[in-house]
Amino acid sequence: MSNLFEGHRPLVAILRGVKPEEVMTIGESLIDAGFGIIEVPLNSPEPLESISKLSDAFGMSAIIGAGTVLTTDQVDSVIDAGGRLIVSPDMKPSVIKRTVKRDGLSFPGVFTPTEAFAAIDAGCHALKFFPASLHGPDGVKAIKAVLPAHLPVLAVGGATASNVKDWLAAGANGFGIGSSVYKVGWSAEKVGEEARAFIKAYDAAI
Image 1 (tube, helix red, strand yellow):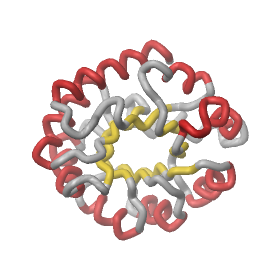
Image 2 (image 1 turned 90 degrees about the horizontal axis):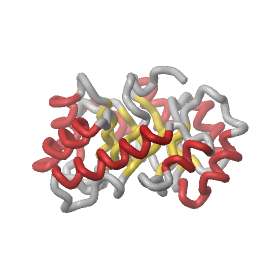
Image 3 (image 1 turned 180 degrees about the vertical axis):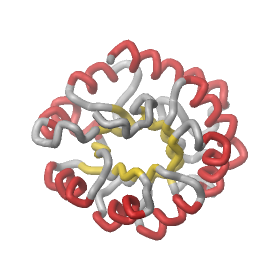
Image 4 (image 1 turned 90 degrees about the vertical axis):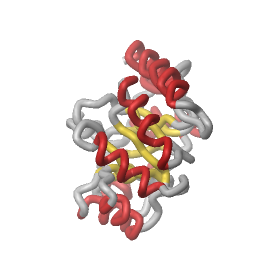
């Protein structure tokens, strides 16, 4: 696999609902726990402000970006705010191509082989299988068997510290992790605790 993840574990911490006033301490807790990739979904409060803060503080040592990116204008806004990672729940060639043009990292959401190959044709850097829980490890394994071996596949939606080994055995290369490492209202200490538990489970499984 290429150095797409820049030496970080292929684990994307998803901070859906995070607020700008708390994002710095939560981001620091995640990075201290071993996460090097952080996504702020655009349906969070003032997401571009959070992305800008994270990028200014941690952008030299971590990959910061946005999730729930649905339009090319949103791609531009995220990258202008300092984000590099563009994650979507769906697969739009226009969004992928704009991300590549802006030197961002494109992780579109796919569910079927047709969507996966369309995303590859558009130039994506990795695939986000979403919601992975509906496929299960067996479904991801079946689809991954026909995909280019070098292209990373991240399972998003359904991965927990207790089942990460099953997903890896099925061929998932990494994960997007939301409620297992962050929920609205959690303190930075709680986020750090849950993040360390996931990192421990992942490291034991690889």
